[in-house]
Each structure stands twice: as C-alpha cells, then as structure tokens.
Amino acid sequence: MQSTLQYKPIPRSKLRLWLGKAYYRGKRRVKWWKMRHQFASRQQPESLLYVHASHQTPLYRKLQNVDMSIQAQKVHNLNLAMKSLHGLILAPGEVMSYWRRIGKPTHRKGYKEGMILFYGTMQLGVGGGLCQLSNLIYWITLHTPLQVMERYRHSYDVFPDASRTQPFGSGATCAYNYLDLMIVNPTNETFQLLLTIDDKELRGEWRSTYKPLYQYKIVERNHRISLEAWGKYMRHNELYQQVYTLEGGLINEIKVAENHALMMYEPMLKQGV
Image 1 (spheres, rainbow, N blue to C red):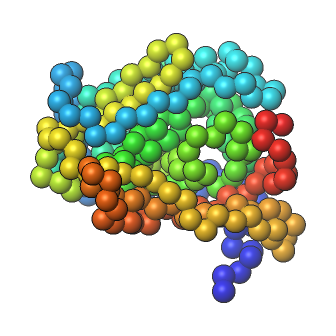
Image 2 (tube, rainbow, N blue to C red; image 1 turned 135 degrees about the vertical axis):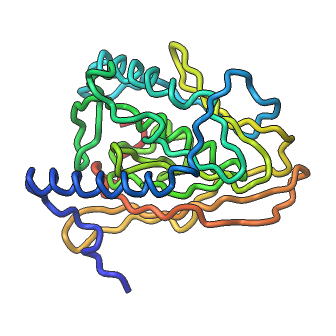
C-alpha cells in the first residue's frame, strides 16, 4: 500500500525552485539534442483531407477575482504560440514537442502576462494561459491513433466541476521547457495539426491522408476523493482510451492516464457555487 504522504506538497525555497528549474531545463535540452532527428519541423498551409479528431474550448470564463483583461492577454499569447504549431506535419515516426516548437515565451517575443498556476494559486507570468493550448492538443490526440510519449498531469484541482465537459484530469499542464507535451506518430500515414481561434473559441484538429478506421472515446475509472492523513483532500482517477470500430463495436481499451491532484476547494461544494 502506498503512503498517504506521497502526494503532500513539499515547500521549496526560491533558490531551490530556481536550481530545480535550471537542472530540469538543462536535462530537457540534452533530450531534445539526442532526439533532434525525430522532431517534426514542416508546416503546411493546405489542410489534409480527412479529419480524425476535433475539439473547441471557450476562451473566456467568468472566474472569481480574475480581471477579463488578463484573459484577453491569454488570448494574445495563444495567437502567438499557435503560429509555431498550426499546419504542423507529423510524418510516420516523427515526434511533436510542444515547447520545442513554441520556444520560450518572453516579452521580447511579444508575449504578455497571463494566468499561471503556482502551487495551486493563480499568479501572473509571461506567456500565461498556454496550458489551454496544450490541454486541447492532448485531448484531441487521445481521439486518434497517435501516441502521447510524454505528458504531465495537473497537481492541483483548482475549480469545481461546474460546466466541465471533459473528465477530471484530461488536460496536460505545461511549463517551459521541462513540463513538455510530446506526441509520436506510430502509423504509416501522415497527420497534420490545425489550430484556429476567433473571438470566442480555440479550436484544434488532427487531420490525415487517410480516412479514420476507428472511433475513440475517453472514459473515467476509479474516481475517488480521499482525506489524507496530513489534512487535505486529494482527488484521484484513471482515464482509459476505448477504441471502437466505425460500426460501434468495442475492440480495445488502453489506460492512458492516472491522476492525483490536491483539491483547492471543498469537495462537497455544489456545482455552480
């Protein structure tokens, strides 16, 4: 049996956090260099013919104590980041690295301050809001034959389930460059990532050169909330990818994620509160 202390947040000094980031960023650069011949790099403006998965998420949400102008700056950041990803061709065997494509978000590149999560609290940071993009890409990838090589779960459950349309834990947190999202194409066909944005929604698609052969569904298993010995509530679940024939017959089920998050609200809080 695993210890209940394993999920307890460990306070870190500013120096310890800085040293940790420096170490993991360096480690990431070494990994990128070793994989440099595997990364997808070509962007194509013309769309491939067949849609395999698509999804859209709202750009603006009414959040307590969050000025809407901050969300407008998030949208600005999303527009900048999308330029490095829209139209990306993922050939057989190639890998997409979220941060290697986007690069480090800085003021010099035009990024503005947006919301970021830091130890479960909302703070401002340059390039804030890009998790919405990594969440979207992760979600549509789970509905294709593409495989997620690397993904990091959110360690904090910040908001209740009101208006949630996807299972808890179905996102991919990101922090340059050590919390990356990496996707590989294990098929014999070419895929393409398409991203668009308007005044209301961020949209994403995976397209390919061939018609879809299967349908995909993400289901939640073993959801529970536990009161830990150290006095806080944790939320846990597992996500599975179900693969169906086009006629609706289930042919496979694969575990794709296991999530554990510290709840930042009362677990019995009613939806909509």
